Length: 268
Ligand code: ACM
Image 1 (cartoon, protein in one colour):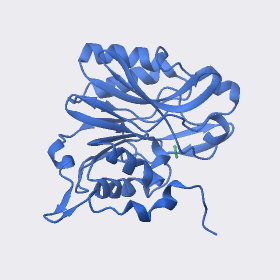
Image 2 (cartoon, protein in one colour):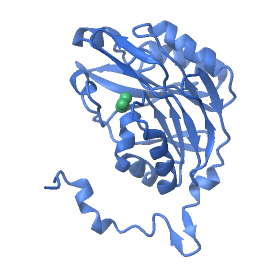
Image 3 (cartoon, helix red, strand yellow):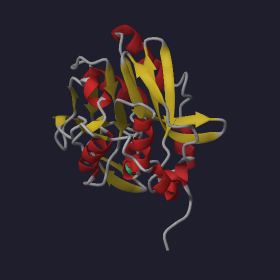
């Protein structure tokens, strides 16, 4: 598994996709994860701008460029992009392989101005096979909602990929916890730099990482560098859900006591 960390230029979709592939060329991995909204950049300033940069999931720029690379390189890519579908816009990620687009994930938990530009995700959390690995997708701010990683792990994910444009400094640490509490690998592909736009400036934290089911960092990028990094993920580690000889992680759960987690009730 590998991540690309980099600095897309707002609105320069073709250039960003090529730059992502150039960075990815430096790593050997069956699956390479690029950041959230990699093709477009993050800070939109109008609905018209979202509409002009949004892509169709199956034949937009991200699908075409990464699909061609996947065919050429005989491996899979995940990348974030602004999706147009049935008159709505989503902050989405796609999984593409040598045979074309395999899956789309639409971000469930939108952050700040994303709530103005995008519709919250409406697709079920799902797990896809990449070779022997079972892959789940989540996007950036989903890290704040441990239900996402837990749901993917319960669906059988060995590896959760996490295209991101992280802004909170706690996120990378929290992803270590998500790895430990679910015994899964996590691949966070974050961006660096800032989007300085007329509407405001947002700065991103870099430090992309790959963590293992024990919470070890198998690889970590710096705060500002553009790079790609890969790590071997031994899937048997993620499939061993026993915490001790007598304590299975999932078997020890008490879901009948967690009903509030799936209700809309808010604490007073
Ligand atoms: C974020 O979800 N991009 C902060």
